[in-house]
Picture 1 (spheres, rainbow, N blue to C red):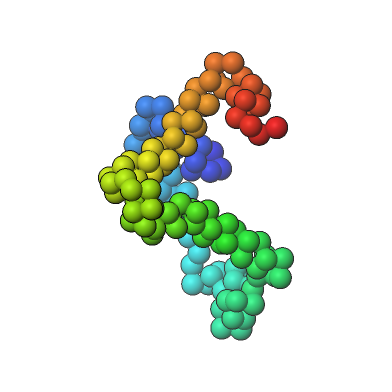
Picture 2 (spheres, rainbow, N blue to C red; picture 1 turned 60 degrees about the horizontal axis):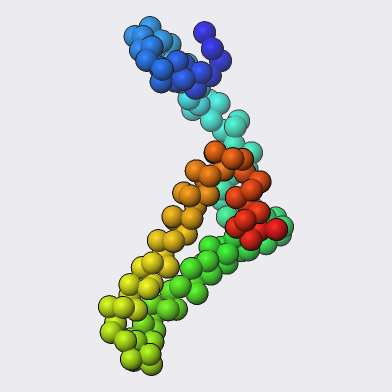
Length: 136
């Protein structure tokens, strides 16, 4: 029997559904569940001893804050345009529907470019689409 239930999952994914394998996996999983006797031995420090914010190191906090700021500010430039669509339409004397159409195209083109670049990279290799995209 494999050491991991994931190996059995790959076999099941290709169409070999066998009841004895399913029983073996459930037995393997039940054997891995900690019981009351060994549950405390796997816990290094109780959650009441160290507050959650003191567990990560300074470098881990710095990485988390950088990732959070990147995620937060990722679409800020586009979001700010959504907040000022009406003044943009008034400034350029165009209907609001035309401004929203431009923003819609702006949202769809990265998806189209990513799909097109992936397709092209599958056909001719990854180097050429990367170089032609401006990422030199």
